[in-house]
Structures are given as structure tokens and as C-alpha cells.
Length: 146
Image: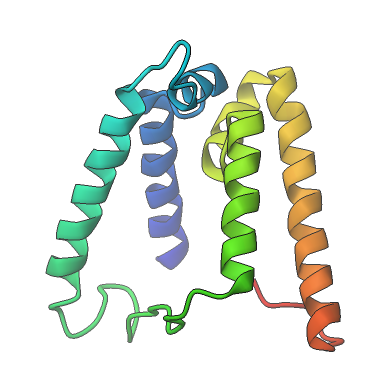
């Protein structure tokens, strides 16, 4: 049952990314180009997502437990540290250069656009390299959990 609901959630998320235009790197890059051909429409997409998330968290976290799990799995880290800042900067740079973030890149894969065919392998390489470097810096020999 968890797999089915995970699949349905991912499908709804992917359809939303395609409908909103976030799987089109030109639309994303035009949103980031405030001095040129600025397209503010993605601000409305992000604003709508933020409002929906804010309301959703307020409603759902009032429940004793999630519908399909025993407990809520919430992040516990509250500090802003170097890994968070570096990761955020790398994410933003990748988004600005490629016009993709991870979710929309996967939804653009069926279009087989040259940009996504370069972006996705490089993203996966970066994820692997990041986890490898994090393991090395912490002295942990075991693979990092995803």
C-alpha cells in the first residue's frame, strides 16, 4: 500500500511540475533572468506551493500520526551550518546554470532534450561525489543512508 501511495504522490507531483512549466529549463532560466527576459510566472507557482505547504503542515501535524506510518519523520537539525550553506549554494548554482532542479529534471527526461541528458548524469555524479566526500570527512567507512 505504501508503494502505491508513493507512486501516486510522485505521479501527482510530476504532473504538477510539467503543468507549471518547471520541467522547461527555458521557463526557469527566464524566471532567473531578472535583467533580461524575466518571466515572473514561476513566482506564483512557488508562492502557491509555499501557501499549500504551510496550510498542509498546520492541518496534518495536528493529527496524532500520519495516515500510512506510525510517527511523523521530521528533521531535527535546527542550526545553519557549513554543509547546509554549501549544499544550498551548489543547488542554486546548478539550478541557475542548467535550468533544472532534481524533480523537474526527471520529469523532462522523456523529452530527451540535450540539456536534461547532460544535467541528470552530472546531478547523479554530484550526489555520489557529495556522499563520498561527506563519508571521507566524517571518517565513516559505511555508505551513507539515503
